[in-house]
Image (tube, rainbow, N blue to C red; front, side, top):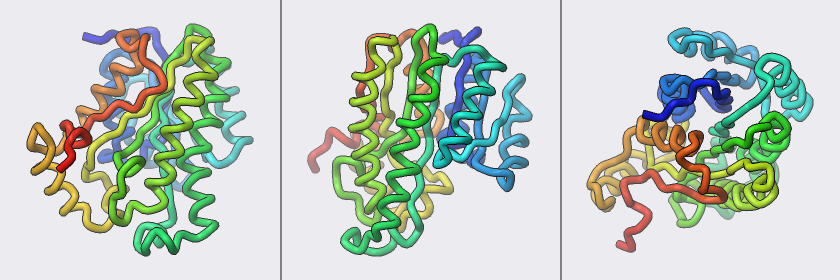
Length: 255
């Protein structure tokens, strides 16, 4: 049993009860962590606050991760309220819908910029803001996908963004290691989240994944939550700069 009592965990990217971030937040809170979650804007405030009603002592805060001023203000609030942060979960990704419908060669300049700003640069910005509050060391966890290294039809610019995200994990791990801060990514197999439904051919992807993966099934969202808890805990103090696959072994198969 992993005990996170006395630890403060911040989860970015909770959108709804089917999101990976929500599964991670539930797992961290169940292990005893003091939990803070964020929502993007006032329109999403009610949904975020209703989600955490069942999580004792959890609090929700507004933060648009593409706005540096909001990030600064948020972490000032964290400093005054919690004094420290032990774990930060970055489950944030976005690309305009049209960028996932057309062929990759038609990626627009603005779509490319937006995907990388929201999906990649936000990890750098949040890690920079969190580091001074990780006075006891800590763990930064982000979410990736196999499309970062292999071509997944219609994943397009998000695949390129996830590749940049995984590279950023390695560079951040090197920078923050002297402060005993670990930075890792979880590459989760396909899951039927609302965000994933924006990718055409999801049902075929799930079927192929289950057929080819060594465990002959798709992953459960709770399994990503378990992996995140492990990375947030002291059981993973020797692991940093890594991409951990939670995909029933799909990534090891050649054909």
